[in-house]
Structure formats: C-alpha cells, structure tokens
Length: 303
Ligand SMILES: NC(=O)c1ccc[n+]([C@@H]2O[C@H](COP(=O)([O-])OP(=O)(O)OC[C@H]3O[C@@H](n4cnc5c(N)ncnc54)[C@H](OP(=O)(O)O)[C@@H]3O)[C@@H](O)[C@H]2O)c1
Image (cartoon, rainbow, N blue to C red; front, top):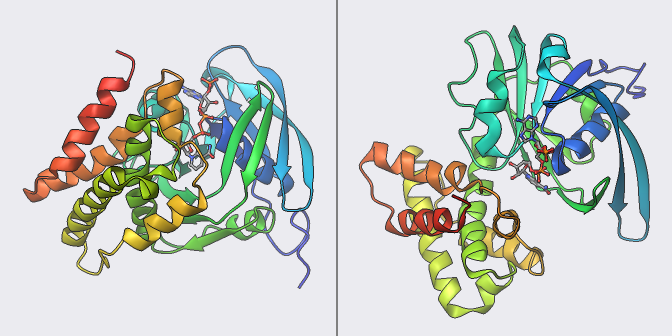
C-alpha cells in the first residue's frame, strides 16, 4: 500500500485550529502541516503570519525546519471543527470559552495534567486526550529546539479517520483506545518530579541523588498509587521504577514547573497534584504529602 499522506491511502487531516502554539503546540503544527493539514493558530490580537524555526536535535545531525503559522483572533478564525489545545492548563478554560467550536467539533488536548477540559465540551463534541514524551525548549523568541521526539499517544474510543494520515508524519504517534493508563503513568511522574524540583530548585536527577528528596518522592508516588488503585483496581500501583527511569533519563533537565517558577508564571500544579487531591477527596482519602506540596508550590507562584 502506498502512503503518501497528501494524496495516498490516508485521509488528509483537514483544517486544524490550534489553541496555544507555544513549544509543544508549534511542534504539533509542524507535523500537521507535514501531513497536509491547514493550521490556524487562535490567539487574541490582530491577525498575522508568524515565522518560527524549529531546530531538531538528532543523534548525529540537527535539522532546521522553517514554519509559517497563520494567527487569527477567535472573532475572525472561522468555525472550528478540529481543535488542538496545547496552552498551559491554567489558561484553558478562559481561552476555550471564546472559541467558535461547532456542535460536533473534535478537541485534542495535548497538555500535561488531567481534567482541564472535563465538562467543558457539549454532548456532541468529542474530546481526544494526548500524552507526549517529546520535549521542546525555547531557544530564542522565534526559534524552538526540539530536544526529543519521543512517543506521543492520542486516544479515547475509536480512531478518527484523520488519525492515520497524521501518524504517518508525526514520529512516534500512536492511538490507544484506552488512553487512561498512559495518562496516569505520566501523571504520577509529573506529580512526583515537577513540584519537588520546583520547590527545591534542582535539576531532575537530584531526586535520586539526595536522600531527603528521594524520600519525599517515594511518599508522593505511594500516595498517588493509592488513590489511582482505588479509582481502578487494575492499576498496578508500583510506579517507583517508572518514575526513577524518567528521572535518570532526564537527570540534567529542568522540569517545566521549575521553569515556570523561575519565569514567575502560574504552574500546572492544579491539573497534576491538584487533580489527585480532588479524586482523593471524592473517595474520602487524605494525601498529606500532596496537600503540603500543592500549598508549597502555590506559595512560590505570583500573587
Ligand atoms: N514543552 C514541552 O516539551 C512539553 C512536553 C510535554 C508536555 N507539555 C505540555 O504541553 C502544554 C503546553 O506546554 P508548552 O511548553 O508548549 O507551553 P508554552 O510554550 O508556554 O506554550 C503555551 C502557549 O499557549 C499560548 N496561550 C496562552 N494563553 C492563551 C490564550 N488565551 N489564547 C491563545 N493562546 C494562549 C501562549 O501564548 P503566549 O506565550 O503568546 O501568551 C503560548 O504560546 C503544557 O500542558 C505542558 O505541560 C509540554
């Protein structure tokens, strides 16, 4: 079978609107354009064309891709049938409220954390959840560095018709009918790694090197596993090794929450540890380590 993307066996992914074309949203826009999709970034302010360079780090070489992004405000972006949400979680609700989504729109949420779009869509609209282990950093104002192109999973229910055409041009993109285990694995990693590195202002690797941080991390993982196992008895509740693998693989890196605190920005703690606390409260469980760490991160955020 021939796979040409634009004209071959798979459907072209169509017209996509993107909410949050920052680091990860711009990488997604690059893959969408490669797959032949039209991309429109929705952002407040005047319509314009944004030019951005993506520098791809590869083992033996690095390649640069120049991208042109059409940017339009919500009032002028046309009806939205396919939306990729890649803004940071605290801004999602307000940004989504202004968008002209059609009654049968599909929304792909490519964010860390959970729950930022729960109960925000109408009954006929579809939410697809995305989880990515890729990493993109800002290099200059109009240059992004793609540090890692790792596995990305979209999922929840049946595979949409546009998916295979997109997957052909998005390295490591796979579909999971049941996305929840993939989301929960990432959630536990984020819930342990992000707040500790932000509060102690350390690179990821310190969580295994320093006994005090290792102990805090162990408690956070145990509490997260406890609540997830109560939500789903099939949850293996043994996340220590998988978190340690991520810490080792990213030992020299600055976590996104540490970077947010350095930048004086609101963090995604509410969608990560806060989501676990909400589920725990519904179940009548207390998660003292998560409760304390959420308060400590909030204390570091801008007022
Ligand atoms: N970066 C990574 O490597 C990576 C990896 C895995 C997961 N993630 C997740 O992906 C999500 C996005 O992260 P990121 O690093 O890409 O963040 P980012 O670089 O800060 O990008 C967020 C973008 O959202 C835009 N935005 C904010 N409010 C908006 C609004 N009301 N309307 C339209 N656009 C708005 C921002 O625009 P302005 O800056 O112009 O305000 C910015 O371009 C997060 O949940 C993060 O945890 C990121």
